[in-house]
Image 1 (cartoon, chains in turn purple, red):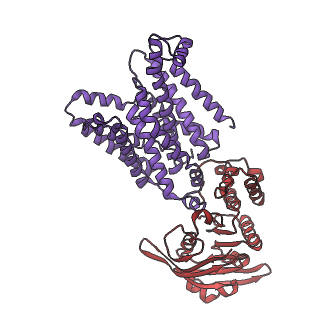
Image 2 (cartoon, one colour):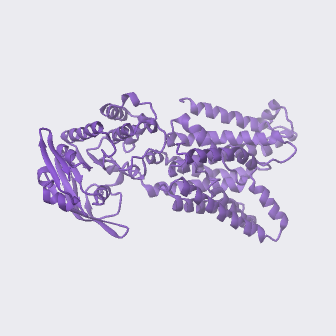
Image 3 (cartoon, rainbow over the protein chains, first blue to last red):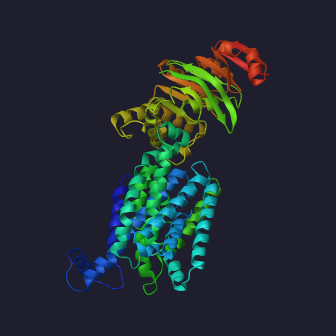
Length: 328
Length: 245
């Protein structure tokens, strides 16, 4: 399909507006958008600029980041089952963040939380690449993901277990479920710069990911450096998944579902799948975030719970397809 | 374009697989590398391209990676196509080393020429993974042709092909050499290698046992030493037929 960039951009843009217009305050759409753009008196500009705008921006940015990293990891590992949430990278980022919270580092400096999450994510990707590399098959990838998830889960459980404050533990559990509620522009400014840098790193590797379609040896003879590509991906993924997890918790399956849906649309080329998955991921996460506010407005349904409920059956379906030998 | 390997040695998993191989291949030559399984044929090509660690020297491996990619195209033994891309997009991957990004006029011309040369016009928009093994192989060779390099290194290019496809492939390689390119390919079929290659290199246990025209390399004594077989040679109007017994 030739027109995918326009279609996906329009879709993501429309859902961004929908996200801005959804909320318990029940503001009239036209007035709300005017208040957002031009300010004014009363509570409406505050609601729009300080509550809904950061939520919508984070939905856009984090969704795009998760879609992009999913597509990039799949391209690198040449495996449609790779996804930062499933293979433990988000879990490792969460472990980093939890350690920063429990040691009080996050109180010393605001940036300690995303930095610790980035470090955790980097360890996670590095472990994954070492264990499953581009030569490992699907089984190796899934087993490596299970092992890394288990490691991250055990570490997080240990920190919570030793936590002197049961309420803090409770809060961390809810944060881990993933949500965009109650975020401020401060969160946006903390997450946006590293995520943009990560996206630039990953997008600069798009030709290399295309070349990997032919396997590692052939890609190398096309002038692609395996080492440089590996570092681009490890750093890029950590720079995106770390801050995303620090701000919004662990939101899974976006990076799995979106590349799977969009791959046929872009002719399966990894380089085209990267921007498409970023746009698609933004659209999916914004839609999910609108949905959690509409489905049960009086209860705080967590975004990560919704994406998992939708994404897990697709994951099962993908494993079924690869199991029976069919290509995805 | 000359490929010169001198004193090339490779060790894999602490086991030496190539021992100081010296080999020079010039433009216009189609050199067939023959030898039993495990003789070091793949290692020879991978080391020549700088894909695996080695000691000694290779003129190709000594080049910076981006320059090397414009000098030699490589067809690995594992015919991998990871994603369901179209034949056209697959062939276009060969343009990655060139500055046009696959979209310049020069790129389009190289892609079209490679597709035409391999007779893939009808498959252009088809998904490469849905083609038959032989057609996929042709698409991968077209990918290497699109790279438009003076040298082509192919690891068992005719393995798994039917007789007609084998002939087409070897004729193409011979034509590429007669256009002045340097072609190096490992081939298991001794008769076909003798018929199409301008020169044969017989590898055994990581050593070059013989290097020269087919008549000299496919002698009874050498074949017995390399493969442990006795060969019946039958001269036909189209070249020698070699029957292992």
